[in-house]
Length: 269
Ligand code: IPD
Ligand code: CA
Ligand code: CA
Image (cartoon, rainbow, N blue to C red; front, side, top):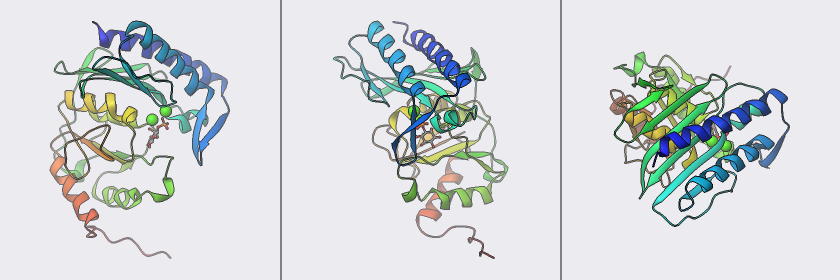
């Protein structure tokens, strides 16, 4: 079965649909306080889920807007029909559609498609990671002080997010910390060496499924923020990097978790 090729075809179609809605500017609704959803999220999910079900009727599907199904086989797709909804709703051109396939608990294929730049990121377990058919690799940056980082802040539970402490410390220790608003693209950018590392608290399985595989297939590392093995369904936080920076970033995280941040917060005024 050509799982990856099929996922690429579906992502391209869903991406074209998203691009169409993006041109038109669609209004948003609120799923929760500050948690946006649009007609485009739902239309993209309908397209992706219907296609997956027609090609792979026995596969399970976990999709963000609730359109998934249980399935009867060991295969399960994780689908984010529009990752970066807040950007999308504000006409900020940074969003994607992403599909990741798991077999018996292990990620085996993943696709992240950015229709604005027409960039298709793909990975298959053991076969490397690619951007528009060209092999990609993580960066070779060796020191945190030479790195460019990225993080995110989930819309849900935003008032309980401790990440601002990490943002400040890592921004002081690196060339800077970007916040693009699209976790799957953040991971794809680590895989392609555009970013040296990415972390976030509170990601959902569909935000990480394809991207985590891309990073490891591009030669990088993924764990949770305490250095434990990553489980996209069980881990509450993620660190993805080029491998060389892993220990140094984890050490910095540890100092922050333990209440010994390397740089004191500046006084106001
Ligand atoms: C969100 C984006 C954002 C990240 C959030 C995600 P959504 O996904 O990836 O960058 O910070 O954690 O929930 O809601 O736009 O699909
Ligand atoms: Ca998402
Ligand atoms: Ca989404």
